[in-house]
Length: 151
Image (cartoon, rainbow, N blue to C red; front, side, top):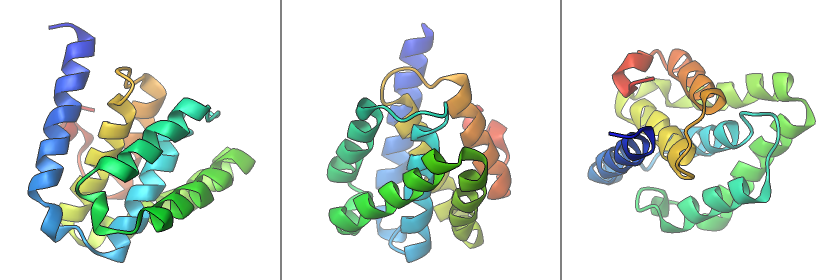
């Protein structure tokens, strides 16, 4: 199986798992952590191009799990995290990882945040090394083993 196909299959499986847990993912901690994860993955390579913003906007608009929250609120939180990362990536990353850590108390939410990172990273068919590295870092922040997600 080609790498592209594996990435698409993995992102699809993660999305299916997220949808199964939709009713358990309604807390503010999950909301904040998931938008922080989206920003971290979008800015993983140090730049954010319009297509990355568009992918996250599309996820916010169409993802069943994220429809538990107002789309405008999600977009605002995503942009705030993105601004921190684009202003000073190293400093911003510390702040964004603190937001991600909010989901640590509930293992189902923590796993869902990682899954959202994988869905975002794989949305363009290229879950590249920098995106994988920041998702792996988020796993450590959430006390989750990266190998559980094939990272």
